[in-house]
Figure 1: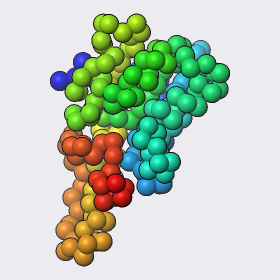
Figure 2 (figure 1 turned 45 degrees about the horizontal axis):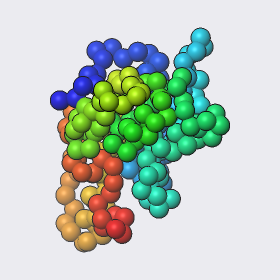
Figure 3 (figure 1 turned 180 degrees about the vertical axis):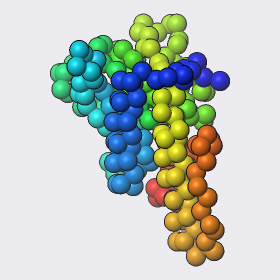
Figure 4 (figure 1 turned 45 degrees about the vertical axis):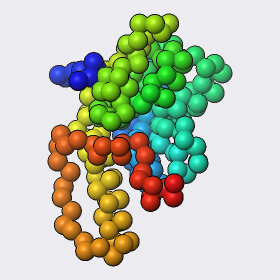
Length: 201
């Protein structure tokens, strides 16, 4: 069970930030990447000020570190001309993995808001919670489950489409595709990367 419980009614700004991250996740799908998107923003009197965006790019950039969160962090840090982003919040459609969680801690991100929980590699409470480690010198507030259903559905639909494409490529009889069920788990081991036959790995 995760420590980052979903709010009953998400903060309107959190919901807005997550919708922006979902737009980025759709961009990832369009280029053949696993659809995870991220946005880094600051809160102000006028709402959220978006500083940087990112979406998954490990396949297209041949970079195993190019997760959505890392891409957004790089853009924000370049804009700030500082690797520390203590007044910033990150919105991401999937619970961060251990690599991304530690990068966010190193960047001193104030808050992390994520959509779908990742029971396979989630490092914000699902598998472990690096954000809650008392030994670390920075602690980030974490809110999970914001717009979890559309975030998870996007991933499930993406992998359902990929499996259908693989069957077609092998000449296997096509099976009727089933709609992605609300609340169904994200396919284990598929949340962050494509199967080897998809990547050539």
